Image (spheres, each protein chain N blue to C red):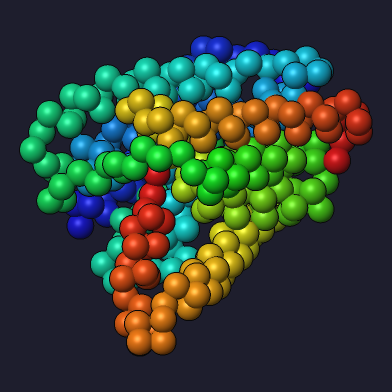
Length: 169
Length: 143
């Protein structure tokens, strides 16, 4: 219950922050990314505000043994920079500039009922599902290629590893 | 053309930073919106409530602004519906492949000096700027 309530409050705060900062106006985001015509640097100041606060509080919070309502902190520990990270981020950047939405502002703007935001959230969801399908198919093929017939009956290790690799950033 | 609004940008950003800090303090979790949201698409038992609550909070905040200050939420953009749909597919696929978006990599990751998040943020900022600038130069900013 505490986890759910605190997540709701965090979602409200995040959504309010996006709306206050102007990031729920797709054209404002586009005018940050578009350097050729009347550059609007506001988005950089959103990052400065957000990182400025979180940078300080993050260190202070991690002095605790554990979070308030969970057993431990789930901080990503990976440091490798691979093709998936760069390729995925490159695709995201292209889509971000084509539509003017990243996932957060899309979800907040969907509340307006506007066709543009609703269309974005629908295709965002489709894109994520498409990734899950493609990723599963590739993993299945890789597992099949790596496994000799004797091991094929026991694909757990491979699956487990890819699951860990897929954990959040 | 949009106006440069540094004060509201920093103020809104600070709220985002507070939200990320609350998620971490309360639940030990990273407030990465693409990760939180996509977890709802393949639900696992015991892992749904907090995700739904966070996304619900985002949408509720949107509803509150639509009612109280409708100008804050644009209902349209300079992009056509077709290109917005194409954009969504790129964003959805890309953030899953790259394990995060502006919130997870940009805000949370950079705040803890993650190498991966720095690489991701530089990459999506770069391809985003190249794409938007090309759209402006080649198509006059309208898609």
